[in-house]
Picture 1: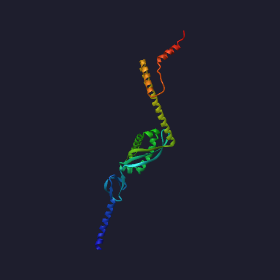
Picture 2: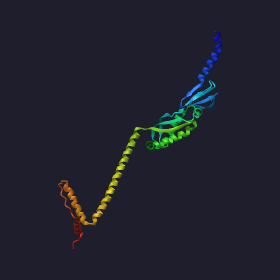
Picture 3: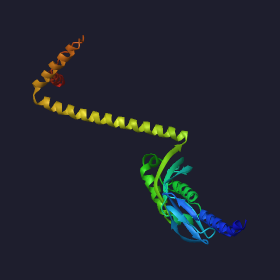
Picture 4: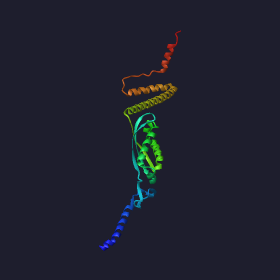
Length: 257
């Protein structure tokens, strides 16, 4: 009993040191950093690996440096041409400065989400519906640059912004379908007119070539008869010289003496 009584103070001191060490040791993973505060004042960023803190004197806030995915809720947007749409997006970002993300903003996830929603409405509201549907890459870049510049003070790097869905109402879908159909009809008419123009030019060129030699027209008549006969057609076509028509017409118009 006397020996245990003499060892009791040492055992108490040893237990105290074990408790202090247990509270002082912290282990941070490779993708984590610890923002350390000593008596409430910022004293540095530590990690990764094993770090030691003074219990009740120093506190640490863990910050994850991995890339985060933020799903931006659907936003009601009025486009520049006064079309109401619902747009949703996704943002990829990560913390690059643990000190700023802890000290400069209370909750960087919530702050980034709210900023992304307002920026999405602001940027898309400056563009027409056709640009939202056809130029998503350019709009993604514009939104990403704005978010990256505004979140830089929070120690956040916005890597990518992707617009996921652009939802429009049924009446606008039908209007777009009618517009696309009218555009296809317009192109078909233009192509048909261009074909007629090219065909007319070729016919004029052929007529000029045949007009140089009148005998060439007779050969063309014979070639046409050969084609008709090959098709087993019952119709008989006789070539009629155009010079004879002109001669008869001139005699008919000549006044009697």
